[in-house]
Image (cartoon, rainbow, N blue to C red):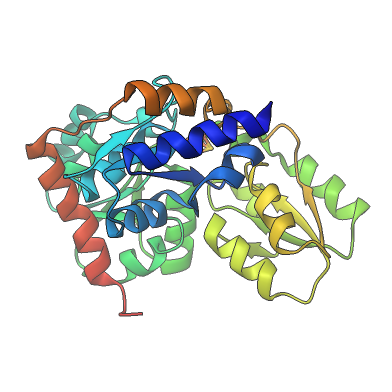
Length: 305
Ligand code: SF4
């Protein structure tokens, strides 16, 4: 049954000249069929570099928008139109304009987990892996507004020593991981290395050994000699971690850390998406160009790799 669906996806993908992207939090079978698996910005950059005509983004709305911002000449499809991100939706462009009016001298740094309209209102975009570098590159005399995730923003403030105005957004999935979960996991597996995502709450982060983005977690685990890890982020990443380190054990800090939006994409929906070219994500050109500038400025602040 699954083999038949996978064959159908392959045939449709070839006929549409499509590339399939899957975020690290997607269900395992979706990650396994994707051409590329990774974090939202890395995937959008990879897709832009391909000669595919269609991008099927197995993730959530803001990720498909980011792909559309970077690939204006490709059609971008999100197989479930209701796959949104509650964190990204916690600030609107109008609210951000209000915040900017209250802090006219400030520079706005937005986490990539934000809508295209919010990116368009921002000076710099950032990811969880480069947020510290981006903020460190900004002039010290300018105040900084960080949206929408206050936990990532607090982490950046701690790391850079900068006083940052934090928008009170948060990821509903990451905040389900509690301090008590961390204490219990550490007691049960005292030899494990604890990796936590910066979107986790401050008490959770204080109980971790490493604060890492999803991409950094994969790299860290791949290069580590340790054989047991506690993982404080959305549970979907454990699929990829196990694939790349079959000799190691990966334990979810909390089984409740499941993002319902990330689990909306199914094999059937990918088939429908490719058959009917749904649901196309279109970012209006004026918004796209301005949002692109915040992404370009982010890249310009980073050292050449
Ligand atoms: S895990 Fe959190 S940040 Fe990621 S899509 Fe779900 S709600 Fe949004």
